[in-house]
Length: 330
Ligand SMILES: [Ca+2]
Ligand SMILES: [Ca+2]
Ligand SMILES: [Ca+2]
Image (cartoon, rainbow, N blue to C red; front, side, top):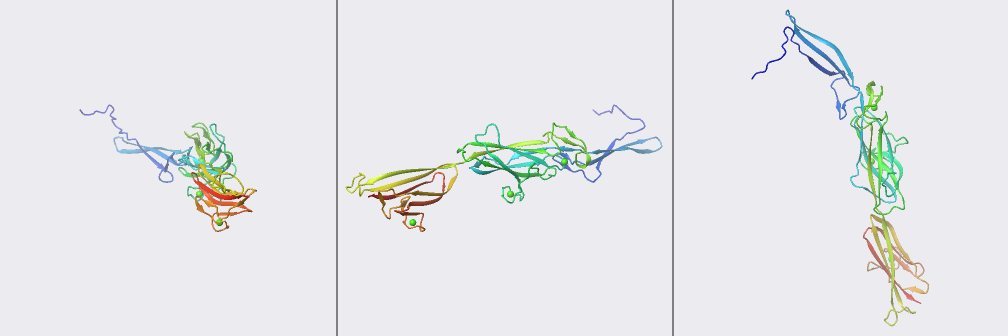
């Protein structure tokens, strides 16, 4: 079978052609489409034969000024909940201009979310000035109130840090969320909402499918290390028995256990020599190893006047340390 055209023009063979050009050169596209402010010019061409000659005419040119779509996404860059202990905690987000023109975004951080098991206090929002993906205090710029990002080019993304304060009474493994909202500074609204003349290049700005606003939630999980200290005593009396009489050696055992999450720092265990007893010189031990009574030569020191002191420094969860020392009952 061959195809026949249902319509055969007799004299004028009409050819409709079109040319799309940008007044400034090639048409640049972004994730949000053709760049805002682009002029798209379009002229139609018709050619025909009037019997005497083949002729060509062109239509008037229609020029389209591309309006600016306002669209944004926010994502959390923390793949796991941020481990939080009392004090500062940092959540990391990415804000991307998904529109087709330059736009800045107002950032709002919310810490009072409905299902939070503890509540953080908002401290500040910073941008990753040195681009290393990590919050660097004193280097990364803290945004002043209104917390507006720099103007982001179409498709540009920036890393944003939300810095919060974790309360001192947080319990291990409790969770909390922080939401970061980004609103286009030109305005937000239902998709299609127009802001006349406020688009890049003099066109309108138009809220896109994101409503020119987006948010994401980051999570915190409290990691709190707790220290337990258990003290016990055993006796060896002058008769080889366990009575507590004058002359009995009383050995105290202190067991320090770190539980929960994370670690603790600057751990020091001290104990006084009880009244009615005298320190038995050279009896201080740590984890079954001897410590000298002198100060400054190892982790411990002991004397009848000042009691015992053992510096354990940092200790991670699961660490257990045992200290012993002996006194004589006077
Ligand atoms: Ca804009
Ligand atoms: Ca940084
Ligand atoms: Ca010592």
